[in-house]
Length: 113
Length: 114
Image 1: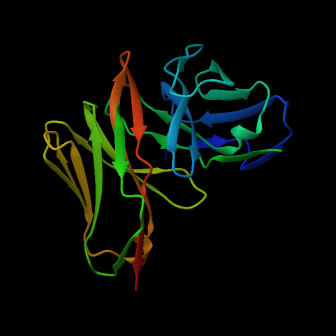
Image 2: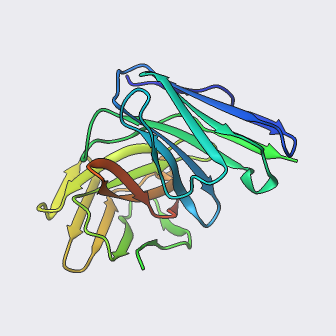
């Protein structure tokens, strides 16, 4: 079974802090994705990566950056956390290009106070 | 503008009935459409994928239809059970500069009562 793990289930940070969210997948997938999920807005794509050291902006990249130094690991970085970044963050991976299902991690609920 | 819409109101049905959920979209040309199930506090789990040239796909008690003229997908759960209670998300699989990109609807919550 594919497993996608995220470093924390719950996280509380202060405004202005630098925040790292880590995601690891164990199935040698090419693609990895970071989403945030908010009530009434659904899942929105922040960044994705199709190869090591490669990244592409999603629909809402402002205030975020990412890092993919190894194939299995994709990190989301909030350079200076703000209260409007309080959300559920979901990581996903998929094997290749279009038509592949995405496998999601359990999510990290981040609260910025 | 591009939109993907699912009924935001919860769907309440009785056990044993067929649940039908709707996904409508505008100004997209998806190559595939996917359906996911999400339980509270968990990540979505993939259920079914249907291609643009397929009209219908089945898997056990699940059936998905895809009408690219109407720009609509219907998701059916037959003989529904209380364990089917969850939020169901549709996702359009649109290519972005050659790479997979999923655009998700906001989901419809299904409640199946005994």
